[in-house]
Length: 307
Ligand SMILES: [Fe+2]
Image (cartoon, rainbow, N blue to C red; front, side):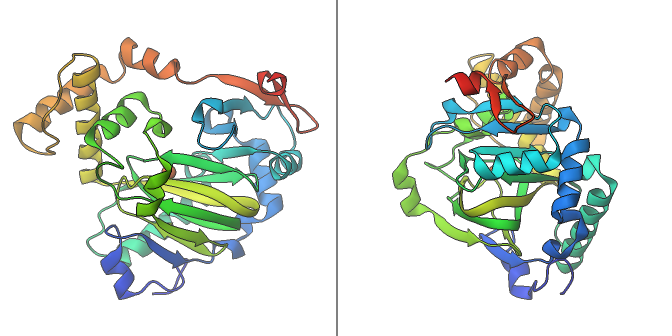
């Protein structure tokens, strides 16, 4: 198959979702990912759909600070990211920008054509722009994930998606608290990781929920991040959230993570009743707050600068 994925083979189709897989793509040639297009996108991007994060020392997610672009020009923002320890996540670019939405639909049409059993039915893309020394700490995501490198080089560590690297309880906590980086990590985990160097024109796919961490190794990094869901992935998320509620709200240690049968439907109802409750919202809110703002010169002002 040739298309946006430039060399997708029958072997890749067999490995997809079961093993980490590095593929090639041609997104770098598209005008949508040129620097002027990205600068323009930053300037017009709605506040509720981006995150700007300043990073602390290695592996200490407590030193993350969330900030605001404060109306800085796209070029100023790109320069500030090139020089700092920041990352900007335009989280829902496929929903905000029609051209990005069409591009993503085209990608999933290609994937579904290459893999008739691939049942993804929802997808979303983001653009992640991060500093040359930036890193994303050890975490796991509930939806399926793809990482497309556009500019700069990254190193990605991918860990097995089972114990001790990832447990049912971790998945419950992610579903309940909506914050992926709080699962435990130890440096010896790296001995069990597969490590991939990701250059522009390369894309990485991995098994569902596989924990991972990322370090930028060269240059300003621009990536497209893709999340996707399917009926089975959606059912797993319902069960993780319901089991998390049982454990944290009601003190019951859940035993099953089945995604069908009467137990599943009871949990589906439970999480639907409680997922927007005051308790869940206050738990999530307590874990996030905005602490700094980029000023016109691209400097981080506020609590970040004072510490
Ligand atoms: Fe991730």
